[in-house]
Image (cartoon, rainbow, N blue to C red; front, side, top):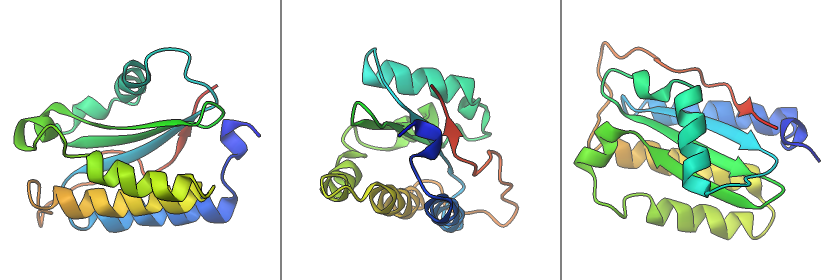
Amino acid sequence: MIAANFFSREEESSLKRAIKEAELNTSGEIRIHIDNYCREDLMDRAAWWFGKLEMHKTKLRNGVLFYLAVRDRKFAILGDAGINLKTPENFWDNIKEEMLKLFRENQFAEGLEKGILMAGDQLKKHFPHQSDDVNELSNEISFGD
C-alpha cells in the first residue's frame, strides 16, 4: 500500500467533510499530508511539509497539519505560531491520544476524522469562526513519497 492509495475514495471524502465541518467552528485551517516513510525526525518532517504546503501563510498563523507516515506508523499534529502563542504546550496531547486509540485498531480514517473534529472544537476557543472567514488553505489531502 502506498500513501496515495492508503485511504479509499469514500474515506478521503469523509476526511474532507470532517475538515470542512471543523473549519465551521474556527478560523483555523486544517490540512492532512500522507507520506509512506519518515526517515528523519518526525516533527522536522511535518514542519518541512507545513512549509511546502505554505500553511504558514494564513492571516492569523493558525494552520494545523495532520501528518502521517503510513509505512512507518508515525503521525504528528503541527500547529502554526499563532496557535502556539495562545495554547498550552500540551494542547495536542489529548487529540493525539484519542487518535492513537483508533489507529491501534487500524481505523486510520476514523482516527484522523476524530482528531480533526476535536481540533476544530478546541481551536474555536482561541480562533472562533468569523463571519467574513475565508477558506485560506485547500481541504485536499496531499501525498508525498
